[in-house]
Length: 124
Image 1 (cartoon, rainbow, N blue to C red):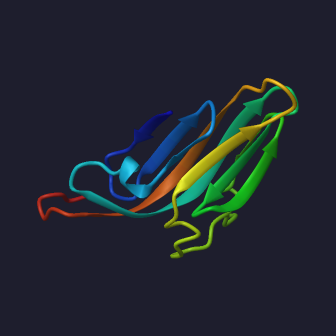
Image 2 (tube, rainbow, N blue to C red):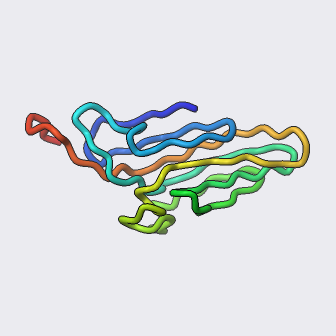
């Protein structure tokens, strides 16, 4: 699993999964940054053998994605997670891939960081 995280306050974190995995808010923080929440911006996925991706926050399933596709929730101003909630934008990020027989796939989950800087020298 790869994490790409912008180093700007309120920037984006992009998570790239090829199988079951999870991450918490600390995994997307940069130095001098405290991330207090992550909100789904977009998701792009693919899976073979009737593969289904299950995306969850804080242990609660928020999306079930079949086959392949891409959705930009931010452009449509669609709220996926509960705001300011431990089972919503403050919860761990997890993905599970299941399918009929051997299943493989990839998912790219872009999240908007809700963050503050912890150093007065940062101006962003």
